[in-house]
Image 1 (cartoon, rainbow, N blue to C red):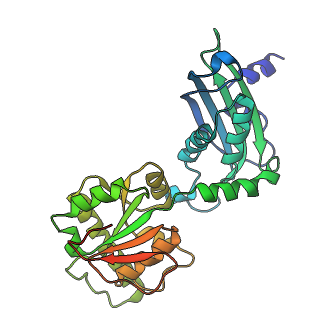
Image 2: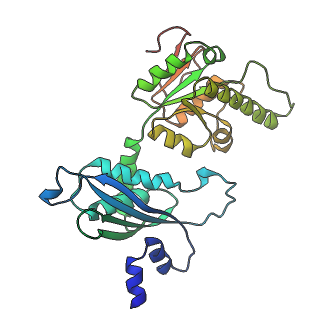
Image 3: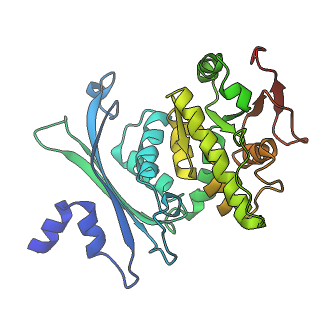
Length: 312
């Protein structure tokens, strides 16, 4: 009995361990995440914010492949905090139970997630913490997952992808262009081609592809040095975070191109076509090219702007 009482009030990670089945699972956890929000059914809770604390454990299937220290192969902690933020922003709720259910369902949308423990506590409603804890598996919420997935797809932001020629990178108006892009509604991802100096030749198709991609990434760092608001990113996870948090990103293409199951038809030597492929991959709202020609027709709206001409 003493053990059961201790587990009832222990962190959800201990409850996850205590209720583990025969199949081992990995766990990620969020501890003592406090947010101020308006929530509650009582009149006294309306029109005022109170602190609520989240403790979450997500069980995931163990990785069978080599991780290679690759953030795109794991369930990012950001997905847990994003699930909380999205549900808090969706509407005002009366019950912690409703909020816990919705957070768990959103977490279980992630392919790696198998079981979610969500504990939420009000910290300002009395001398102690008042709260609720739920446990949900994918099977528990299976009926809702398709609907939730469709809603999540509609909520997904569609960034504007902007290709900068080498002349555009070095143009005095670069920072003004970036400032103007930053004021627009769509998040911004910048991409570039290779430098003016041609990369070394390997006389081997696969190794040359890597060399050419790395040459593009050298230009990414050159662009980032021109304006410190621009951050070079290489993974899907980094890009998702940047898009959702208003960061201006410069796409370093090597990892995403080499990992793609359906990669681009063109090589990195045709950098505008490569950027057009990526625009379709991320479902960009627009593909804007500054200082270069349009590629072939695309499913994404695209246009070209001469250097010195207005962007919009």
